[in-house]
Length: 546
Image (cartoon, rainbow, N blue to C red):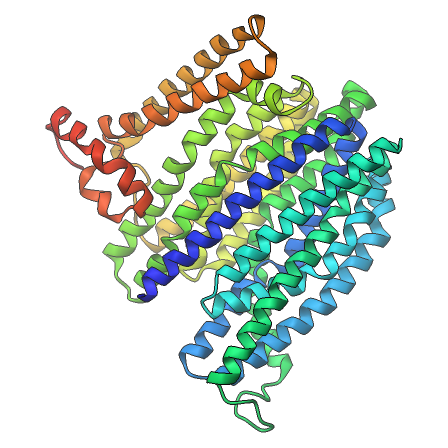
């Protein structure tokens, strides 16, 4: 297997694991949402947002940096240096896990009461804190295995983590519900499921570590005192790691930080305008429903576009401007074109999705509006990855910091006017500003065109399919008068999904948003989907191929 094929296989493994993890997370949140009241949903959502942000700080960036450092050393036939780097990373993971767990446990009451204004969330935040003991170490192990070219260990550990988390979270919540516990303790019980998930993930990584160690003992010489590279000072290793990882951490933090900000300010900004109960309900809808559904569209889009990043990095290193321009353009287009169908389907069927998955129809507007905003999240994440690929992580970091400032200012400015929708608008503005700054930065590195003269065809596709999705949804929900509501909502979602998925590639080809001559550069799944449709373009278009 070639290096390129190996990378593509690894990318598909991680993308498949990420998709399965997201689906399992969806499966988890649906029954929990039915068990919790507004307080429980708000508490559970807050606990997860705080946890994910601190987990990102403790581990994001360092695994990818570690992967790079390890792979480089093995490529240079310096396994002893790679193992020294790995040991240093494991020590950092263990120490940071303890520190961040203690910090979260101690700060939970203050944050829940004085910042988020949901005192009941303190128990859920404290219950999820022990999961942080192991996850930084797990992240280091995943980075090392990826550096060794083993993506399977990371993928299986993610799946195991989510399976155990789902089973224990739902199980504990339902057992405690049957025992008559309040929302506060139900959310805490469900949050504690993350601890079991971390134990399962750690167990998988330890198994693969032992397996790899046995293989290394057969192939590699044991480390000896004084061996070159084996005595590299830890200070030097940590300086190298942090120099590379800090901008990646801050860039990776964007979505988690935005969700954390929303959880922290929604009730504070809305309570004086709509009252405490309504503000808490809006927070519950945002954290337990909207953020979950809106997290689905970026998965495939980011996986497909990220598979092009190594090609972009190689073209940048070789100073091949023509190839770099084409690949940057392709990565951005692939992310937009592959993410848009899910955004349109989930956005236009928000009413039906809400009725199908959750216990009430309330809050469907919040779900739909946030889902539409994810198109900017997709472009932001892809452009961030491209800047990392061309060695400009600090520029990406600065753009993210500007976007976060925009998010805060816009939230405080728009919440008094538009309520929760103003806060969601601020989220969209944050992602859009970061995207525009990233595009401006990228164009200074290599001139490229995002859509060129295809904007009319692209926007027409969005309008037509968005209108069709909305119309079909409005027609479909009328079926509630002749059949059970959830059956009607399920059929409506299926009809809209099939219609959009069927018409979308046809319109892209007919309107020449996607063209035959550029098809070889697309990822294989998109090539297979679009190739048969190119006959429509040949017969229906005789014009220029710009």
